[in-house]
Image (tube, rainbow, N blue to C red; front, side, top):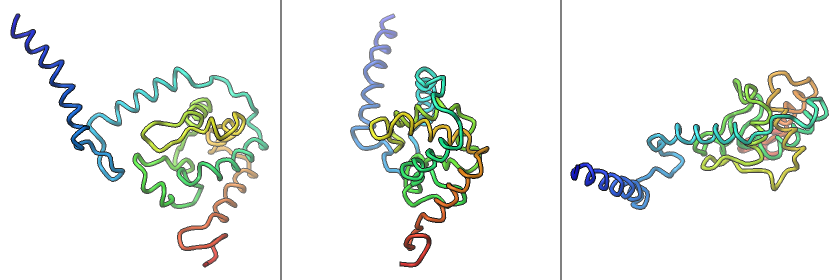
Length: 184
């Protein structure tokens, strides 16, 4: 019994000290180019999903209509596109330098399989240790819902919203170019 108690005390003291030393002595990977820490992705994902499930809004207070999609496009272009991209555009230099890589929301599935309330929660609160800021202090609730509806329905947007997104791509300067793709 004595060896069990000694082992328990050592486990309770030594393991936390080793974890502390791992971080305090600079052994933890903190650069965006470094690989993830052991269990980092699994633990962060589990915590995020549990929190969102508990707190996300269950109902959408605005209509999923063309006017809200177009307003969502404007907000997305200004606040989101630099990290999450635009249709038919290469990822930006900013997004290439981030860890974890921000999802390119108009490529593949994006977040069209997420409920709008889930996306709203992420936009409003941000996601710690990812570079995703919370916009609850910068955007109105309506703007955050408009972006959330835009993204939830990205695979079935009306033509006007698709054109607005495409024109955003045509207007956005790329590296080494001026406005509308002209050379400086």
